[in-house]
Length: 205
Image (cartoon, rainbow, N blue to C red; front, side, top):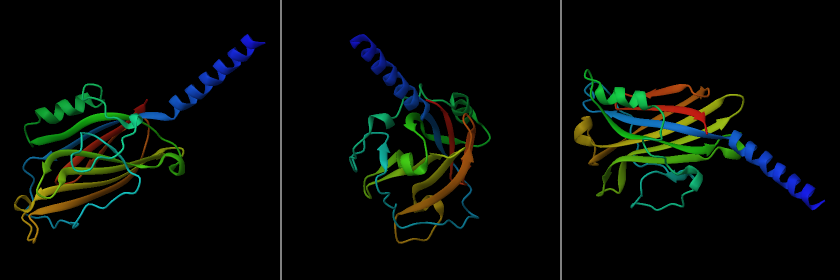
């Protein structure tokens, strides 16, 4: 009887393990900016500060600005472990337009209905502007699934105003970039902006 009970517990454990794996996915991400963007003809939308996202899960490099609690499930993988290797190589070798890759990484996270797993993920990259306590790139990305995958992105690029030809009382300009899209497993999505680009892909975890 004890052996049968132990076997039952093992089978239940395997079942829940399988369910957990089925709802966890690998997020592959490349964030890059244009080295010499054409800014002369643009009227940039700007924001005074980067908004706060309640209960956002911060992942990425060690953050000397604000130390958040980091969930082990959302720990960044190394660039070698990340997908989109071919795309990263192409960006590095393009000769017609120079790109600077700010971040190439991946992480594992659960994706389900937005009410259950739809937390914002906070990704940081690029330079640290110590005089204003800001990173060059702040990205808030939210994933959910309801038949297909939903990806909501609220991205913020912080640059010295001298680079963007904008009259401002501040020495830095924060440019917001928002995007919402539906996607499929393994599909590569390109979020484009005259200053910034992002490739994002969801693959089985």
